[in-house]
Length: 401
Ligand code: SF4
Image (tube, rainbow, N blue to C red):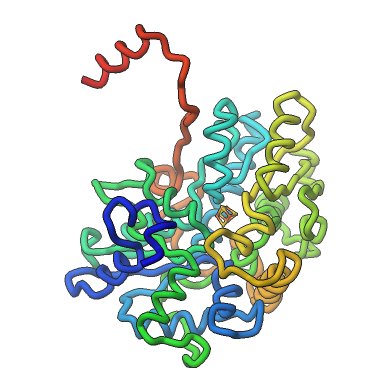
């Protein structure tokens, strides 16, 4: 089908990711685990003529169950986990004079951009893996243990707003024992096509609730990952608590919200750490400006969130193609995301009971031994070297042979 044109894996193998996903789901030998990202649920309804910005999470769960998926999990759970690790990492860097500003790491469009254009700044990127990858790693270890499943039989399928997430899932850093943590990535549009092909009209499905008791609960902080500024706002809610022992008075950190390509705020982390300046950036054009400022030593920031797509993931390249401009549908998707946060009883990642249990039963503590092994990653210089001397080229060939 037409997907071959947009999907590099499909182009090579002569097939597409929709077929890959269906093969896994229909294979009785395998246990399929599906996760979907925060921004998918307030955009996917557009493909089925539903109201813009409507939260279709409950209908997506029904659709996945009808398809025969064994376990339906939420990437939001892993977003809360990312905040625990990344927030602790920020504090560790601040206390130990580590590399600052720290950059968020959950957007592969941004991570690739740094590796290709500013490789000397890869140490600034948080080592915490993205929610997609953290969920994959936890499904094949923690969940396998809890559900008494053979990890070799588990396959993880993601539904993402993003085409860059396909490349992220294939990085060698995210392979364990010869298998990737995330096996197949579908975009929101591809998943919509899959449902239509299977004769499922999302708009007509009844609502269902998540039923997995280990990796589905999420806080309001997790779901706002789908909007530009959301990761930062979620991190502030938790870092504030970790440092001061108190919850933030105003949970909604409105300075970090909005459309401006760069927003700034300052958070007071008490007498020991002082004030930390925060920046939220979206689009790579603005990211380049910011990087040049940091390089020239003119940057006051301690922590920076960057999302490659305009508006963050809700405006991602794999989302429904709206007939309206960014300031049309995207605003409704974004409002939909903030409404979910507002209506959650638990608004902070550290208060998610399933996250508390994951640490108590399995990870023990943020930045601990297991976290390092399963939830943190490394980055590399991906600039193409075109100025090799013959001597260097021969040396490389010798080393490889
Ligand atoms: Fe993907 Fe865009 Fe979200 Fe980055 S901002 S993770 S490129 S959808």
